[in-house]
Amino acid sequence: MKIRDVRLLPLFGQTPDGGWDQKFNKPERNLLTLVEVITDEGVTGLGTAYTSTPLVQGALSVLEPFLYGASALDPAATSETLHQQTFWQGRGGTITHAISGIDIALWDIFGKVTRQPISRLLGGRHRERIKPYGSMLMTAPAQMKDRLQAAMARGFRAFKIGWGPFGRRDARTDEAIVAASREAIGPDCELMVDAGGSDGYWPHGYKWAINTARMLAQYDVTWFEEALRPDDIEGYIQLREHSPVPIASCEVLTRRQAFIEWIERRAVDYIQPDVAKVGGLTEEHRIGQYADDHSILMVPHGWNTSVGLAADLQLVAAAGNARWVEYITPAPYVEDLFAEPLRMDADGMLAIPDGPGLGFEWNEDGIARHTGGMKLTKSTL
Image 1 (tube, one colour):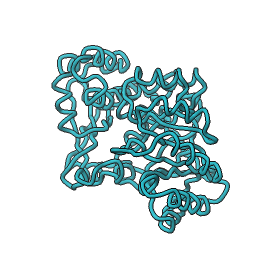
Image 2 (cartoon, rainbow, N blue to C red; image 1 turned 180 degrees about the vertical axis):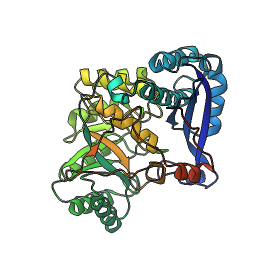
Image 3 (cartoon, rainbow, N blue to C red; image 1 turned 45 degrees about the vertical axis):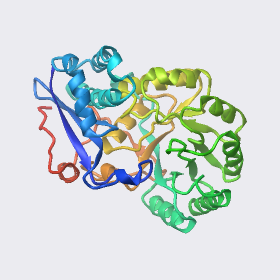
C-alpha cells in the first residue's frame, strides 16, 4: 500500500488565544492544519500539523520526491526517510511540522489496516484511561474561578492555568490568580501553572523563576511550566535543582535529537514534546522512551486540535512514564471536530480508545465549519 496523495485542510477563525500576537488572530488567517494521507488502495489517515497551510504546502513540494509512492504501512521508516532526505531543507522547522502531520496520518492508516489502536502498534498499552488536565488561559481572579468551576462541572479534576497576566504585571497579581484558582478547585484537584516563557520577549530569568516557584509551592502546584525562555537550558538545570515544585518545559523543541541534552542533563522533571511539531507519533514515542530511561515523565503538549489530542491519547497509552494528557477547554478545534463529545468518568479520567488507528470518528459538519466547507476523503477502511 503506497501513498498516493496528501490533502491539507486549513483551520480558520477559531485559533486559541494566547501565544500569538493579536495581528495573527483574524478570522481569515490559518495557523493550524489537518493533514490527510490517501493511499493507492483508498485507505485514508488523518494527522495534524502545528503550522499554517501555506507553509505545509511548501514543505510538501520539498518532500514530494520521497513522499508519493512511499509505503503507507511503514510509518516509522517512511517518516525517517523524509527526515533524512530533507536534512538541508528545513531541519526542525516547517518541514518537521509537516512530517508530523504525515506521520500521524500514516499511523492512523496502519491501525485501520491492522484493526489495532496505534498504542498497541507502538509496543503495547500500559493503561486504558488517563487523567486529562483542563488547559486554559489565566485572567483576573474572579473570572478564573468561574472558568475553573465550569471545567469542574464538565468532569475535570486537574487543571493547568497559564499565560494571560501571569509574570507580566507584578508578583501580587500572580499570587492572587493562583490563590483564587486553588480556592475554586479545592485541595483535592491538581493545579499546574504555565508562565508562558516562550512568549515573545519574555523578561524573566532564574531569580524571578525561583521566587515564583517558592510561591507556587504554598498552593500545592503540581508543576511549574515554561518559567524561562525556551532555549535557556542552563537556567532550567539550575531551576530544576532548586525549585520546590517540579519543572516542565520543551514544548517548542522539534526533532528527537533536540531533546537529548535536556534529558541527559535532567533540565526538567516533566518533558513536553508536541506531536504536531516534533515529527509525529514516531518521534514523540522515542522521546518519551528516552525520557523514561532517565526518570523523567512525559506530558504531551497539546495546545492544538482534536486530532492532536487523539494522537496524544495513543501516546500516553503506550508510555510507561505518562500520567496526564493536555486537553484545551473550551476549544472549538477540539470539541467541534469529534463526532461524539469526550466524557470523563467520576474520577476525572478519560478512556483511551481501543478502536483502529486513532480510534475516533470525526464530525464532518464541524470540520466543514472550520475549514471553509472542506470534507474528509471517504476511506475504504
